Length: 140
Image 1 (spheres, one colour):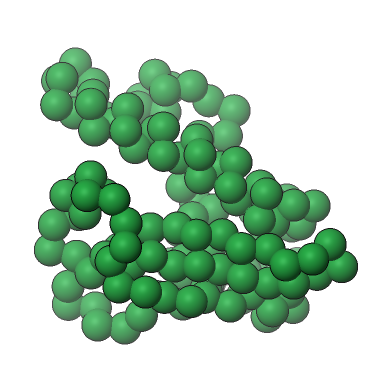
Image 2 (image 1 turned 180 degrees about the horizontal axis):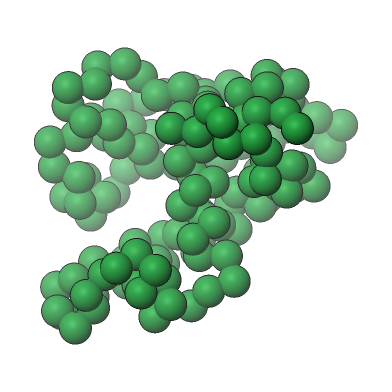
């Protein structure tokens, strides 16, 4: 079974990283982090595919995120909303949604993840399962 890095190399997925460029709520959720907008791109027999995602790294990490890092984290995030609802997701993530402030943040995050889930499926298309269930030995 190939690793995520091998699949990214096989399909020629490239990461194009830009500072900032995401919505204010995302920026507020991750203070003391570098905030990026990353576009992943590849071309196959079905044409060109692109996925634009917000991404963050700790301030002490001054390296730009790689395609492996971005896709690994993104796949992990969308996996948690696959076949689940908001309440179950909050339970799995150990969020206390009785607190109105926490609930509001969770509702925002869950809604973003639902959109991201659809975007990742569109981006990877028929390759989604291959990427989602590849060897996780190199996962960050």
